[in-house]
Length: 239
Image (cartoon, rainbow, N blue to C red; front, side):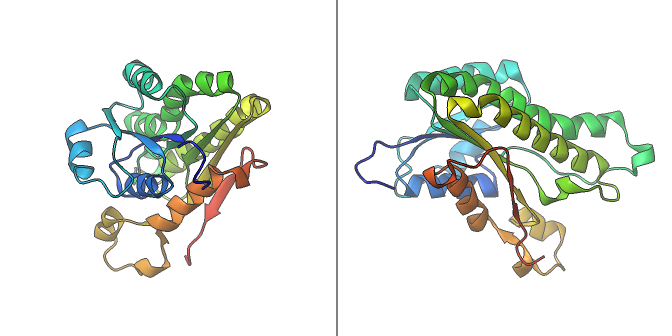
């Protein structure tokens, strides 16, 4: 990053999670000003109670990212504090194994669709207008390699991540002429504490590290990705 350039203003949802923390650390190292969103303010404050170098002056906000009503005042406060948002990283989402497709409950379907697809709409709806006004911006969502095909007992999850990718592509088509890049990363299994606990016998060295995923996000948010629109950067790791 150019040391003479003004700091970028970066918003990160799902910031208290393993990947969110890695993304926040990456942008902080670049000197960015951060607005961090998660559903539980106390947990967010605990996670960032001792900021790493460069993470001072962060804005911490609690919000349900699936709710337009909840996102509205949070986005307004961030835009009021920052004046502009240069990068929006939508990490927030969810995963769960579900029922077989022929017995899939509507509750499971809606939960995955809300967390992984509708949340993208609820969040971007409050920041895209400001990016369009300034004629620049980067939006990076966190999709999944599994969005490309269905898997047993993962119908709702796979469909919701596929829906997210279609939303990324559609938004990209709508705003690229305004100087806004919209893309996603699509990692395989991330090496997180939650995944290690869920799959203790797995070979986690084959998984994608959160650091590697954060670097991919940073690339898509950089000037080097200026010509990339509506793409999904697949992170296979060694799996």
